[in-house]
Length: 344
Image (cartoon, rainbow, N blue to C red; front, side):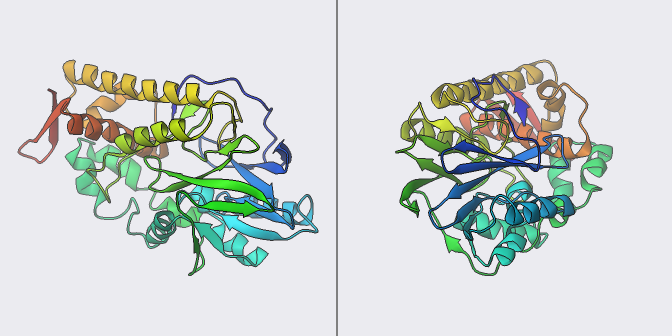
């Protein structure tokens, strides 16, 4: 995820493992993550008779211990009635199966995200899969860089547990009635495939998950399982849909960073940010870069660890695929099958 202009925030963040109210009847739990992006925000909604939990954090002992404390402390005495998982990324779905079993509830998800999580748990999309070697080579990563990215194996397996074999489907246009409070279901693509977002129009609260974040641009990447995906076009279309659907004045409470006001301004900033990234791609190619790997130092002018390199590569390719689809770039494979890029 790359840095972009931040809006004005409304709350100080709780310490990891602690909980506070972000809006009436909506609790904010911050969980630690073992990444450079070191936290995820969990939202817990008072649904009248108990709680509706939105996401879970990664599957590790530290996160389990925090949930044990929450269920025995601030959430004690009232049941968890519903567990909503917004998308398949480990910091959101990681403990989904464990928490569902512990609380005696099912999981509520969009169809695509449920099956994507099960697919990823089955290793089909893992970075140690055979599909990744030709994928990375085609776009110019060196053998050393490929080794650095793939030697970690499939972290998805380590950071998630199996979901239940049944789930409750939600889709865009549905309304969740949580103790008489109406939460409209929106979905968005680009960061994930069918990420769930929730809007309480009456109370002016929007939970955009990872689709709109105040201090960074959400990662928008292309992966080996769908190498020609136009994820950036999907993401930009989703932002425009949110802007047309969600009022500007809502309190926006994302799953990373802090809540803020000024949603439409933030969306405009994100759209501009990605246009500027495309301009940087064109500049890098004009100055001699000829592959997706070759443009990465221009887009990410800092040292990347292997975890970050995988995300950075996927995001660079998302911009390349977007520009290829628009006709702003041309791509032709060379004799070794490496896709060589030129400005149109």
